[in-house]
Length: 217
Ligand SMILES: [Zn+2]
Image (cartoon, rainbow, N blue to C red; front, side):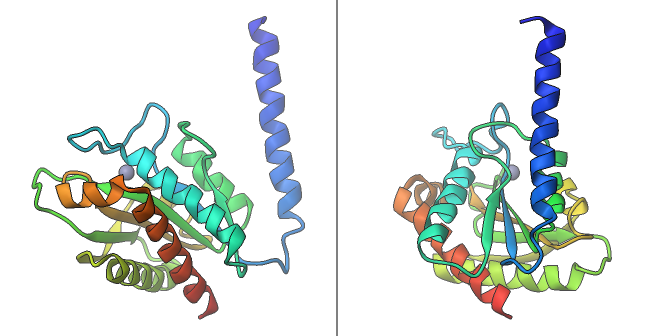
């Protein structure tokens, strides 16, 4: 296809997508709280990779999709939207545009860690390192989610940390915003956990249960 028409078609498609989101955002008052789940990486960006080839982008996406399926069946006090619908690379900016346009209440970016030290293990949660009106509630959310999930998984809790990650920087002024490193793909025990579907389902359900409690506070 002629490049100009192809470009025009893509541009129109993008405009329609944003118009749909914008229109939707006009009618979301008095609806359930909105939770954005951001499965990190995707497409050509695999994120961390274990020795045997388990990819961070796949682990976090399977947990995220399991959260959507379980949420449809069981949990009804909030709505979930994913920042990517498949194995595609979404820019960091677009991940946060979705969250901000939907006027979400909570943004959770899912990641897996990696370290030179293959003994490093456990779960840590990040919030943005600048002061803002949602900083305290983000720290509390990070604490409840990190502590609760590490107890459910019997993994080490490494605490709440502060960082200037773009997804946190671009959302933290508008909603509670956290980034979770669920475990280490450099650690054999963590990799074994992430390799089993039933464990990923358990992580997804545990996250939903904790989010439900946080939103009721
Ligand atoms: Zn990552």
